[in-house]
Structures are given as structure tokens and as C-alpha cells.
Amino acid sequence: MSNIKVGDKVRFLNSTGGGVVRNFKGKDQVLVEDEDGFEVPALIRECVVVGDSEMQVHSSRRSPLPSITQSPAPQPKKPAPQPEMEKVTETVEGERLNIYLAYLPIEPAKVMQGSGYETYFINDSNYYLFFNYMNRQNNSWISRYNGIVEPNTQIFLEEFGKEELNDLERICVQLIAFKKDKPYSLKNAISVELHLDTVKFYKQHCFMENDFFDEDAMVYPIVRQDIPEKELLISAAELQEAMQQKVREDRRAPQTIVKKKATDSAILEVDLHITELLDNTNGLSNADMLNYQLEKFHEVLSKYAANKGQKIVFIHGKGDGVLRKAIEKELKTKYKQHYYQDASFREYGFGATMVTIK
Image (cartoon, rainbow, N blue to C red; front, side, top):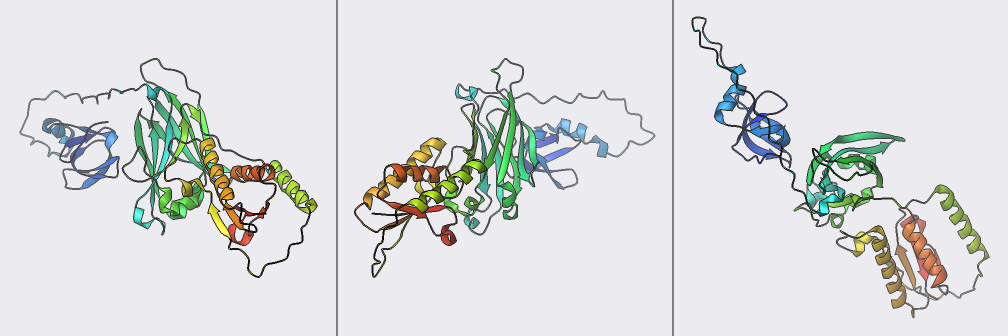
């Protein structure tokens, strides 16, 4: 990619014309002032810096025709210089694919009100990537961006508003990795589907410090160390069986008669969402985050073990149900003495479990 700065004279690779760079627009576009004084947006990768003489060659179509009486000697056409291929700087770590999607708010101070957002594709590897970025709508997939990204490069994909967030709950990235003019290790074609929690786009703390941008961003890994990200999904049949089993267990459980106290203990809420527990999850796998959430769960129960009758609501979210199932397993095996049930549906939906200390 050319090192272009304000004031440079450039020409366009994919169309006739050029001009002087007057400003930058976003992270991958410049505003070029042409001969007529108009500022034209252009992609940086489609511009090449040139000298004054070369600009005159490309702009000659706008010059007035010579007088009939003049018969200037024909000038040989100067061949257009071919853009130099930028040499790829490779690293040892870059031999493994590390691919991410990043979402940045355009106005960070207005995240709560629903700022606009930008999407970036990050290729942290030594490979060129041919990729397709899609979202799911009405049981079909719609391509939002596709193309080739260079090694160790991040590119801007799109800008979208809060009204489009619902369309991004299900996204998919498909990609093929390769190198140009050199041998390389074969990588399998990759297709990764992700579920975006669109509620996080309204929470300031969900946009975190990261390794790729100066600004806070929400970064989703697609591939880490050559391993595609996989969602932890529970089938509808497994979910239905689990619900039926829970109903049977609740019905058969002994019903203890307890006299009500004059005043109930205050209900304690503990939010186990990883974004509430940690400011930065970079480098953590799904298993690491689950273990951290369970450690917090054990810590709270240990702290209030002596408070008989204390009610604690653990907010785990609906999601894919992985954390919920892990909590129920712990309650059935390590905390059999405590009573637990779904928390108020009106307040928490299916996303919380209430434990009563016994």
C-alpha cells in the first residue's frame, strides 16, 4: 500500500484522472482535488503517487486541441508505470492464521443512545485472504463485503446504524488463505458462524482496549492459531429434554414447610456476564472465560454460606445455555443443601437462576 500524505499528487489506478490529496476520509480513503477544483473520494489502495510530468500525461485529455495550422511533432507515448508490489514482511507468528472482526462506535460518547458503528476485518497473518462477510436474514445469507485482504492488514468493511443491529445477530465469515509467488503451508477453507449480542453495542464498557486500534473496540475472533472459532450450541431436542427433566425433578423434590419471616432477606444480584467481570478478555478462550465465571459463582456462595435464607440471583444470560448448565451441575453436585429455581421471568427472562442458602 502506498504511503500517501496530504499534498501528494496522485493518479487513479482503476480510472482516468487524479489530482492533489487534500484530506483523509476514514482509515482507507482520501479526498483528491482534481483540475476543476472538485474533491473526489478515492480508496488509498487505488491511488499511486506520481510526479508533475506524469500528471500532465494523464490529464492531457482535458487540454485544448492544437490549432489546425500547428503541426507539432508526434511525441511517443510514455508507458504508464506499473505500481510496485509491496514486499510482504513475514513473521514467525504470522504462519498461523489469526483473523478477527472489530466493531468501533463512530461517536463513543453516544453509545447509550445508539451511535453509528464501523466494521473492520483484521488479518493478523502472513497470508493473503479471499473472504466473504455475510449476515443471515429470513433463513438466507446476504453478502455485506467480499474481496482480498493483504497479509498483516486491517481493512474497513462498512458503516452501519443502530437500525441495522438486528440484522447482525447472525453473521458468517468464509475465507481461503494463500500466498503469492512463493511456497506455503496449505490451510483449509474456513467458514465460521457467530452470534452477536447486539445489546452490547449499547454498553460503553463492552468496547475495550485492544491490540489493533487506538480507540476502544469490540473484537470478535474468527480464527485463532489456525483454529476456527466454534459456537457452543445446544440442539432443540437437548433443550427440551433438559426442561422436561427439570420439571420432573422439581415435582418429585420434597416440599419443606417453612414459616415465613416478618421480613424477607434482601435479594442479592450477581451478574456473571464476562464483560461485567473483566475489562479485557483478549487472549482468553471460551473455556478460560467459563472457568472464571464459575470461580466467581463459587466465591459468592462461599461468602454467604452462613446467611441462612439468603436469596442470590445469578444472572448468566440466555445465550447458548452453557454457563447456565454449568451452574446447575455445580448446584446438583457441590451445593445439594441449597435450593435453586429460575429467577423471576418478568425481571430476567430465562437468563437468571435464584439460589436460596439453606
